Image 1 (tube, helix red, strand yellow):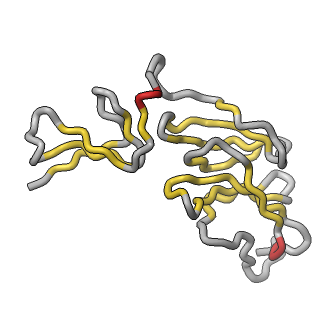
Image 2 (tube, one colour; image 1 turned 180 degrees about the horizontal axis):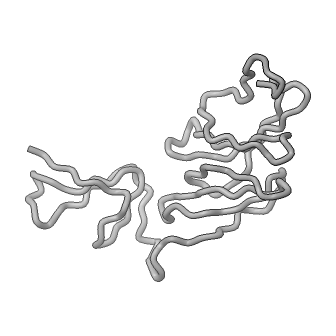
Length: 164
């Protein structure tokens, strides 16, 4: 919707959902995250450049690290985006990437994984069941969605599942 009022105008079009819009400080661009049609759980960062006619906004996608990239926020001066990234080998952390086409690869800002953790033990399978050693296999286990980690400890992405 124009700042002066009026009807809302759709900026993005396609078989995806766009979420968490963030206006640039100069009010010429909107950063957002969107799912991908062929990658359930994967989200990419997009930037809509708003010109004189918002119905014809120019939408580009920032090459980010494969996985789930969400919550883009503009840096002062609008030259970079900070966003949250997670994937099968990494818990949610902050990354930064240039906001213009041809920007270098994203740079990691934080690392919340325990020091010394072997990330090669991670799996990108959609789900896995880890049995609870105190309960018989037919009664309960731990179900991990999207990302599971093959270690003796139970990953944070798991929940307890019980059967009758």
